[in-house]
Amino acid sequence: MIIDQTYIEELLKKNQHASKEDIQTILDKAEIKTGLNHQEIATLLNIEDEDQLQQLLEIAGKIKREIYGNRVVMFAPLYISNYCVNNCKYCGYRRDNKFPRKRLTMDEIRSEVRLLEKMGHKRLALEAGEDPVNCDIDYVLESIKTIYDTQSDNGAIRRINVNVAGTTVENYRRLKAADIGTYILFQETYHPSAYLDQHPHSLKGDYDYHLEAFDRAMEAGIEDVGGGVLFGLANYKFEVLSLMIHNEHLETEHKVGFHTISVPRLKKAEGMTLEEYPNIVTDAEFIKLVAVIRLAVPYTGIILSTRETKEIRKTLLKYGVSQVSAGSCTDVGGYSEGEQSQVVTQFSLEDERPTAEILNSLIEDGYIPSYCTACYRKGRTGDRFMQLAKSGAIHNVCTPNALTTLAEYLYDYASEAAKESGLKFIESEISKIEHKKVQELVTRNVEKIKHGERDLYI
Ligand code: SAM
Ligand code: SF4
Image (cartoon, rainbow, N blue to C red; front, side, top):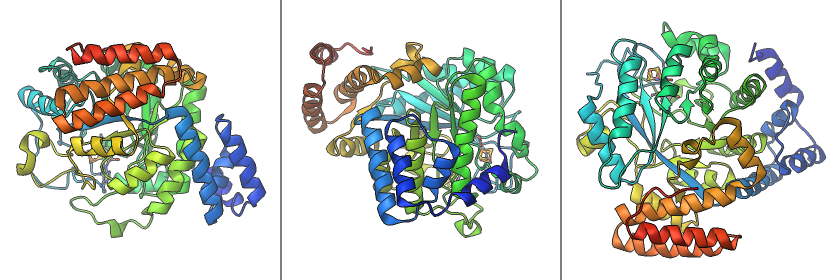
């Protein structure tokens, strides 16, 4: 059994009201970035005292800066089909919601991808409802091929992460052969009875089959898997501890845990109201839980979507988040339809700023927006990526790649004003690189990009 409900609940109960000293000891241990055990995670999740919370955030911020520097990885979701046979109570695409369903044709995918490329995106998360007839694996594979093949001007999608329903080892093998990046699947809730309640009469309603999806994906050779919880369905402390236990299970069984963790919070959707959910996570709880995840699994990327406001996104970038989406649409064909887009989306979004605006404000806040996809293309996946991350040498690879991909963006898609200030920012970031040789390499590459070369990476 991967998730033992009684064990988790007892651990949370036993580790309430820790002393200041106990918490200090845990934070000191967290600072050396070797992760935390179950009891320590439970203790930090139970922190309520303001000073202790502040201390927790400080250490999370320090770890975030040491491991990820000021880079932020950018991506966008692409919804290819909203046909769904499941009835997840929280989702606008559930089968009881009656609206005209749609799956994109290959031509429609090409136009969506061209628009995403014009926003500067190189990395997509492919999203679809579950429907073995209208959205079968052949259709998903054909869509992946179409996306990779759609290259216009300097635009190209270089990494497709895939967020489709849990499936068989055989289908995961086919996804692996299609060169996907991370296979992403949210457990939604680790709480067994909440899971059953939220997924009535659904293929997705089989808790164990869903939970074991990553074991099948890894058995099929997919090395990078991305977990997540839909926060708001059950007690957040139970969810975080379960997520960490799931991660440990993957480390034990497959030698590598989650490549990324997503932290979606429940939002209003067609056919449901947030009042039906007593476990909605407040902003303060949300910030705390992201900081605890940062301490518990320092080297695992944390992904935040445009479900969140720009203010929350800014705060969480400080304490743990390393990857954000931008310019997102959560309806099928939404990028092409723009303002005309259909009424039923999967859920509502909070940060609807255009990509260029998000990028500018990241730069203003001192972050390097990164369109880098080098690791996966260089075969640095699974535990090879983790070893690089843990060695600290990652800075010498990621910062140069972040800067050169930002330069590509500026030359290909930015306004004159944004280009001018962005290039100055790149120059000042290059001067902060420790090694002279790396500085020179990045300067040379940015110059080459100015003269038309593309896709330069280490
Ligand atoms: N249909 C597949 C599945 O359910 O696993 C693929 C992913 S679905 C398109 C993407 C995710 O959206 C779901 O896993 C769920 O966590 C999230 N989602 C659904 N309804 C939501 C809501 N009301 N608020 C926030 N996120 C939601
Ligand atoms: Fe379908 Fe996924 Fe929505 Fe559930 S969460 S109804 S499986 S699209």
